[in-house]
Amino acid sequence: MTPHPVSPTSTAALPGHPFVAYHGAALQIEDVALSSLAAQHGTPLFVYSKAAMLAALAAYQRGFAGRDAQICYAMKANSSLGVLQVFARAGCGFDIVSGGELERVLAAGGQASKVIFSGVGKTQREMRQALQAGIGCFNVESEAELDVLSEVALSMSLRAPVSIRVNPNVDPKTHPYISTGLKGNKFGVAHEDALRIYRHAAGLRGLRVVGIDCHIGSQITETEPYLDAMDRVLDLVAGIEAEGTVLAHIDFGGGLGINYNGDTPPAADALWAQLLTKLDARGFGHKKLMIEPGRSLVGNAGVCLTEVLYIKPGEQKNFCVIDAAMNDLPRPALYQAFHTIVPLTLDTGTCQATVFDVVGPVCESGDWIGRDRTLAVQAGDQLAVLSAGAYCMSMASNYNTRGRAAELLVDGGTVHLIRERESAAEQMRHERLVP
Image 1 (tube, rainbow, N blue to C red):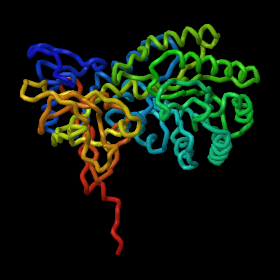
Image 2: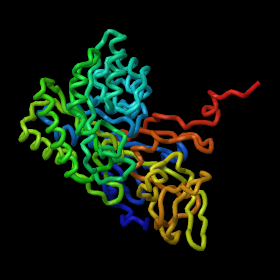
Image 3: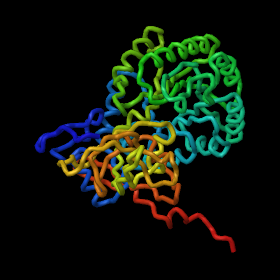
Image 4: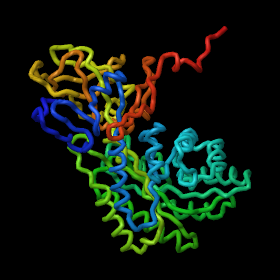
């Protein structure tokens, strides 16, 4: 990036990041200078703004004011306990996709009764675990899963509350890897099969049909896919209830995008104003609503701090080698995703701005964080990779025996360490040498 146009005494929030701003030449998150955090805790380092999370949540809460609605944080976006605790204390439920995630919810103080269990491959052990905990609902994704869940519930003398995830075949106009509502995706049951599968579910003694679910993808930045999906789902609700199965709730999933690179997704409250108008017009405004936002609650609440290790000029490319890598920030390698990269301290004119590929130290050509970025940096400078709150730490790995980064939660001027940096010894603690 070119030097940020901020005078030494001014304050300027970064676009899409109202709680990340330059105060003079220093980048802060809420009331804390990021350079001081890097100095104290080292890099790579993830830092999250509590205020940013709660502000994002507040937009959904405004959108549902006066409605019977439950917001379930889709914790796969970021499952760190300190982050879950913020949403649990704010009254959120949770959307989980594994038994391990259920354990995290309970450890963070979440209520099992507000948990929705999604995912195409739930095991019988996970089903038993969730039933024993008393979760709110299973989002079932296949006819075979219905049969297995019914058998598991009957073996425990229980009836499992279920909602069937319907694939509406609506194009969310997003990256194909994060599209989940088309016919070629693995998720949900086909729209044209849904009525028959609901009849089957209603006849299984171990199940209690309580709702219908739909989720079409992630990083959606347009309103139309949501409106189209709602129409298709409400058509099914009418047909299902006409056959005698009353649905207590309608779950419209999540998927609302954030601003990574000039993206302009609708605000959550504005989006739901349109969706609720349609819901009322179709005669279903009295139904309980469930939604499962993830990225839109945490994505722009987090930054990853990193240090420049080397500047490596080349004939075709100049490389800025940093100490964060694809194991810390996997989205560019997975989706060719864009993250804005900015300096922690604005350039004072000591470096010449140069176009770099920003890359990490992992031994893979796919280990890049940003392509063709204009930066005025030298070895030892520190950078912030923005929009790093979602699908970074939750997908982090130990590739190249790299320890996972530390994580901090900032609340105004208070800093909480919510994850310690991982050592090599901690990575190897479950391994055994052969005698």
